[in-house]
Image 1: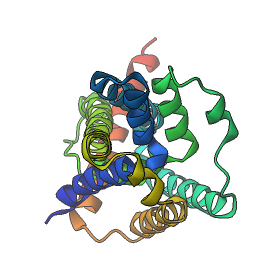
Image 2: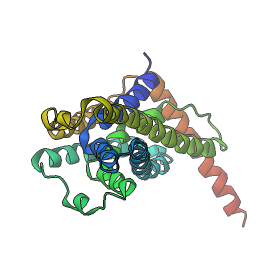
Image 3: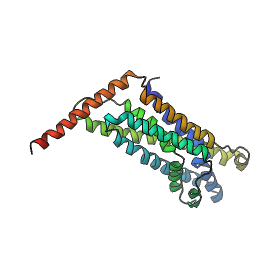
Image 4: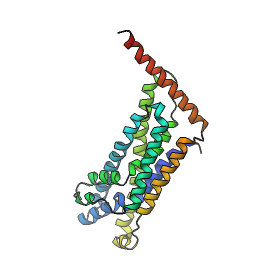
Length: 248
């Protein structure tokens, strides 16, 4: 499996992982359906959770897509993102309490709750090192027009990562929610509730450490060559922008 395929697989796997985690909201979807005694409320709740999660992913990824235009600082950006992920993982490892403000969000605003929960737990931040790795696999040609192509490609990649991740999250969490609602019942929530807080924090630290290592010790020669092309493209674009200014 090549680097790009591995990274996209990580996007999907992380989505499944987030979906299985009760902290991302699938028990709330079950609760909404049971309280209303209407299965349709289950699907509405899952849709609201998906919208909130998708917006949280986009809110984290799109700023990094803009930063990827600073090709000369790519390693520093990857390093900073990795350290940020590690720091959040350590914080969650020390502080096991769930954010209290989430309890103040009304159950009728599941999309808002999902957005805040994903931000508070670092769900989007976990995707950043994977997303930056995907950006490193994007093909760009040297030349002044390639800067705009790079901008478009990184933004498109951010959207694709957010959609793929959220889709996997909803499918995984939705499958559990449907199973609990139609077959397993509330006894499953009482007897089989599992806490992934520790694993979540450790996974953030692991993702950050792997990203930190790969940022400084790339193993793919193609990525090194791609970075060289992007740097050349950046210099050509800067030159094209400076020449018109000199003629004024």
